Length: 345
Picture 1: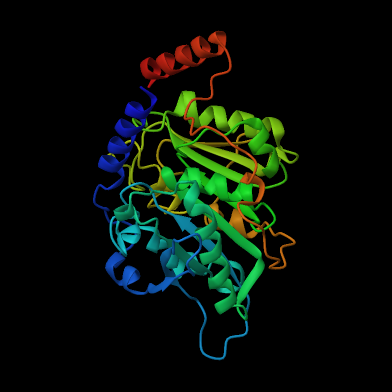
Picture 2: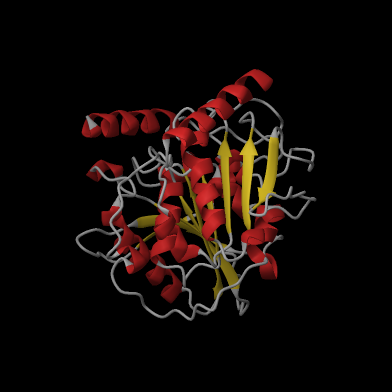
């Protein structure tokens, strides 16, 4: 039964995550932004090489150090080389407006791909090859990558992989942003990122990665183990829309808010979105200080030192659970909250 449910989940994620990208209305030229990305590939590790597309802010004779954003696609985004860009509109991170918000006026953006033609979408077998690809990219751009400002994020299955990479190699990432993650790690696993700033985003009506029984429970556990709960954030979309308020093709697509830096098309509050920190306090976002500014406010002590194997996940074996229920009472409390939201929308 567990295997059957896993297959059904995979099919559902594929159907929704592979939906065609829709251009955000505030900016034109998504095709031009996509075209800026360059092909690359990491070294073969454990029989697998992770290919990627990347954007570089470096100009001729440029000695500046720039942040690096690693953005991980969901299921359906790895069907062919380059599809990870088409499925997410992540290229908006490379627009002139967004690049100007980064430290030193720019950032590297790398979009790795989990090759779904080989039957994998960010499973545990891709952890070491992905780390090797990131390491190799950093080595190739060592003169301009700011090692203290490496950030990892992604949506759906990529949101799961975001948490796995952060847990495995917390020394590498200054902050993480996990969007509707298709994984509910234990408190033990989350304790490895107790010192890491993490911003989670999810839609309440998400039909694939349940907000109430999955994402919000993961966030609650993260707040409990965090040593800096004021640096943990959770953005909730009561209705999942584009930045202009028009409904997204699926309520699973909460990554459009993140790819618009958490602001509306009029540079105000993102439609139907609220944000709180780990202390339960409301967070007010004032344009232009959204996700990018938050990321850049955090640094690490990472010096490029090589890690071993799967890092903290080497000996940590956890089921690919998407449910965070701890008791029958907890189940009914969560169910009641979900029903209440439906009738108060």
